[in-house]
Image (cartoon, rainbow, N blue to C red):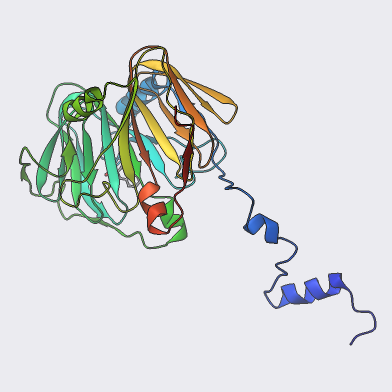
Length: 314
Ligand code: 1HN
């Protein structure tokens, strides 16, 4: 034993060996409650739409393989909209093609505006209409094109942040601009129409209704990482107060109101996108009849046994 030994000296010599004491930091590693880095935030369509329009004038699809503004959480960096989810707003103008590629990351699209554009996924050409949800499974070649006369805007949801932890995300360009495709069958498992989802929500006579998108081939959530759902809240009514270990991205399909998240008040209206961090209690209050689309990381949390939820039963 060295006579002058000390804790400081021990730590220094441990550091020189690439080792650190656990006991000084252990509480932070097993905190008493989840500690997401993301904060609640709203991206207003009234602010984002003009930026997309300018990007449409200034940047072509030759220079931007995907013309997207990422929705970056104010407390984090891209690609984080929440700790585990990525969201972005994508614009494609009439006549444009966003060229074919594929990647391990899963994507879903929620169509915000426009008509006459398509996304071709693994050989199925899927047409887009407002409110549709379109899936791009992992490793499926996909390109987007606008054969209509209106700009097309949609919300992209990807599991990209997950690949910050698992460096397993490859991407490949396709050898041509478009991957060969045929019109998708009307019952394609890649598309969920809004009409169908709204009918499910409206069939519930309660002031608040929740319905999950279920993959028509697997009967499971839409992907192994990301799940999606929609909610209806009648005007002057509220959702229950909930909290989940899932992070959530919400998009306002129709309506106006606010969401209370952990002391923050997020005001929103049609076209806006907002996020709810993991384990933050949240409650939606609708000023008028409202439909919300949401995606979350519940499937991957379920897979690792880490999904938990509480609600007030209201
Ligand atoms: C991507 O491939 C798309 O295909 C959208 O539309 C957003 C964000 C990061 C990486 C790949 C698309 C993306 C993306």
